[in-house]
Amino acid sequence: MNHAQLTALGRALRLLGEHGEALTADTPDARLHEINADLKRAVDLLEESVTGTAPSTRCPEHPTGPVDESAPDLCLLCETRRRAARRAEFNGPVPRPHPADPVPSRYGVSGDRPQPQQRWLPELWNGQAWQLCGTPRRDRREAEQYLAAQRRGTRPAMAYRLVHEFTDYEVLRVWGTPVRIDIEPMGNL
Image (spheres, rainbow, N blue to C red):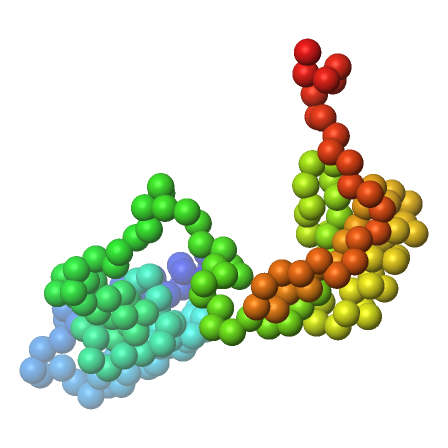
């Protein structure tokens, strides 16, 4: 609503207020028609001023949110939050993991898997230990092609191996020779 609309609407409503104060039981019909015309003018000014949609709830936080007829403010979002709070009063708070607990892996723990699946794990020797160097593959040939591409790459590792995972781990093939490298300079003297 701009300033001109605000001024015109305020003037029209003040005029209606004056009409209301002057209204009596013996007000003539001509005066009632004048009040009717002023009232229509005020409603037209109000309709021109309103730009948004009418609020569907009585909630100040979510005026156009989804409606829940059983909620006191008709707001489904706030009522859902209130219901969750009431459930927490009866059921107790939701247990939160302690910060000292280990963070669960998004892939789960080995014991969580009901049946192991057959996979081929491409690994590389980093100078200290074997580490996974790519996504575990379901197809052995694809895993070997991946390792061949890694060996031909710009920065190949000292050694690669392909590990078969089923119910247990079995090393299938090793490329290169893994040599343990001391990470301290001068042999840790």
